[in-house]
Image (cartoon, rainbow over all chains, first blue to last red; front, side, top):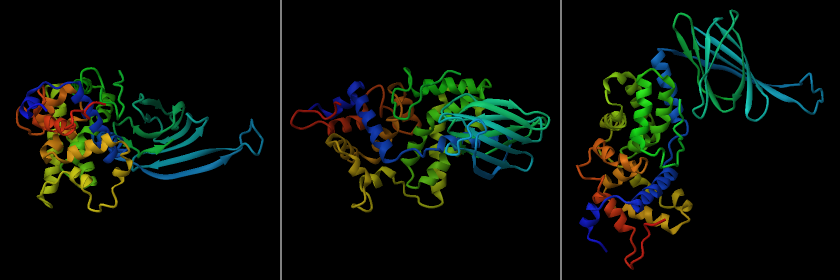
Length: 166
Length: 205
């Protein structure tokens, strides 16, 4: 067996790297990072950076919907209406799950004209949509997964919502 | 914004290591790319978690420390002139935050890996049941044989890449020469413990 001091003074080689990779897997299995820690940190950063208020999830109602174009009673789908309320802004979205990976959001925001940022999972780009004067907006082609919203007003104030699963 | 190719179990995040990848993301953020901060958070949260956990038995305290460190970074983004320094800055901040949290309560520093290796309830070690490979059990007990400082060092650098080891050791307050580019005593001890006295080596995959 090599002298321990010689071993310590040797250059790091591929065997060492593999050993550390194995250690990483063990440690990761034994003490995993909480799944949403990164996401919660991102949201906290956004709230702080925008000096935003945080809205509360007020309602999350799932309703069965009979689609007009598919009147078979056995084939119902559900829509999910999610509502957030903050002191300076509110947001309500109707989540239309087109299929397992794609979602359409049909939404209303108060105040009208606010810009809505949709922050989603997996490092995908942030989608931005501007609501009409009456606060209406539609977003198609969103991926499913953990999602949170930032409502940005003309006066610079912002509201951040908690995460919901689309 | 280029993707960084982050997978939680992928040790080779980029070709040039965690420090280089985080420097790119942080530099972009300093130049106004807000999305780059989300990338940075996803990239570095695992290593920050394991740094906090090496000092802290309580998961909630560790989570809080990581989150607070991110907020501190945003607050002081302009004070970090060299983006290459951002990982070291975060590691130092996490350590200080955990230390400050613990100061009011328990002054004893017990790396949480001790609890995992020798659980309070010997009949309830879920990890033991998941270690189906003898080599893994061997690695686990080899790690248990290290000093707490070595355990902490190796645990943290395991979540980085070879180019990063030296800088991380510095940020963790380890003596010069602890690791990188030479193996150093901690890694040497681990490697030695993984070497079969009969001449074989368990160190290879």
